[in-house]
Image 1 (cartoon, helix red, strand yellow):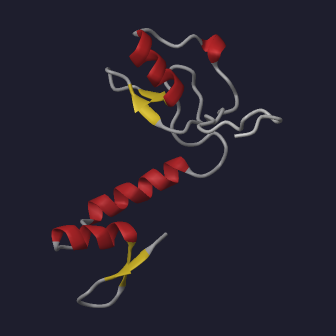
Image 2: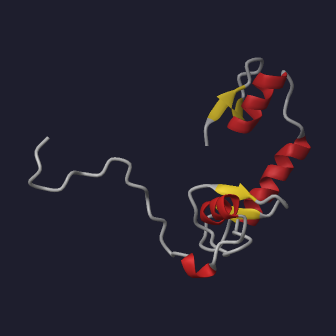
Length: 112
């Protein structure tokens, strides 16, 4: 993590505490610090941790979205619901995120 310094004492502060101090002019409350620590303990970096789509139950997505009811959705399910007004069929679920190709290469043999 990024570390900052308290301008008055020159003591190190974590990024969150440093930004809080800079924006609000006071030290970050202990309740917020403890809430962040609890969230880190619950989450972890291992497989199977982190948010889960409430529809397809995937844990890997480029963007997390929320349904109108507040349920957490992966990007694919969220966009599908927004565009079509119904849940995304589970048969469309893929195990790998397919990146979009914004600038496809022209077929070989064609000159520009």
